[in-house]
Image (tube, rainbow over all chains, first blue to last red; front, side, top):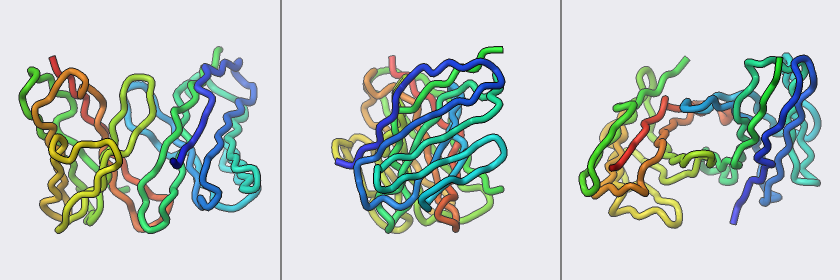
Length: 112
Length: 115
């Protein structure tokens, strides 16, 4: 059973702080990892995509991948109230297709 | 960017009726589309892969006779929930992959409520 695990939260941080979101996955052969943001009642939107070990930075967001530990994380610097949402970790397990397997998501609340 | 639309955005129906949800790629062709379901406070669960010109591939535990998928053209996939029951009430989202591996275009979702 291919699984993606996340702490459901909620994770509460004050405005301007760093939010750290974590995700583990079960299939060691997984190659592609995604972080999506989902607002209530809306479809998910892509925040970050990473496939190499190490860090990938895009603005206030940094994704970190450690394939040996089967762990991927998302750091949000200078958190804003508008970052309050559910963050979904997703993995492509089957490289022949591109269907995503999602974790349950972590709810982030940024207080002003 | 590429856009995927869904119709209807929201539907309320009586138990026992069938509901059809459309997923369209508006400015690109999609030989494959994915259907996801999301229950409240749960994650998106892949239901099936819709393939243009061939049968859909269903995930384990998803009844193919209850959730009929038809990929009628390179821009349209439909999901029909047959004999809907209250437990089918959920948020249904379709997506279509783009050319790049990291590209996945999600539709806006359809909220189904079965009374």
